[in-house]
Image (cartoon, rainbow, N blue to C red; front, side, top):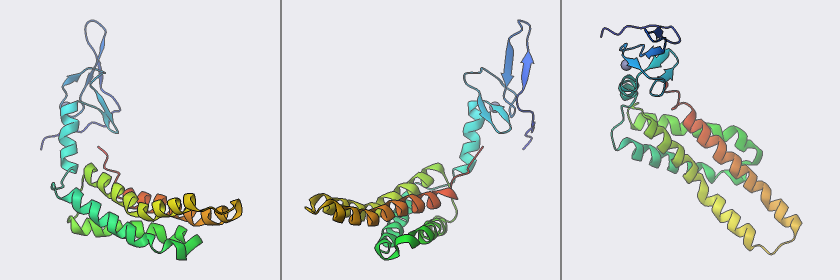
Length: 179
Ligand SMILES: [Zn+2]
């Protein structure tokens, strides 16, 4: 590869009519400000950006499905524990997220893509939902007074915390696929 790496934030050039023209800092093609994509290393044309994204997109079509299923199953499994964990959900949930990351990475042989990230995120959220839905329904059906409703809200809060922590940790290490 004979890629010319320039680290200048932007490559501007003044042409005869004094209109600054942007140039792609990878292929040096002139680009208009409308189509230019600003990357951490400067402006790039859309073709170059697309090409670079392909390098990061190494998954097979089945991988997001695998990622989604693994994520959903582990997240669902972990959500059984939440009523017993209470406050300790704060410490266990990130571990469940990390477990999802590692299991998915192993299953897809470290291939990666944005679609896979999204599938893992969706799986983690959906996997934690069944119990939330059941408990919300119970809460609605309950004829109880305000006090007992309040007492039943706390477990639901921990479930929400679980969903937030598991999904964000499961997603965290997969992102960062920058240009
Ligand atoms: Zn280019």
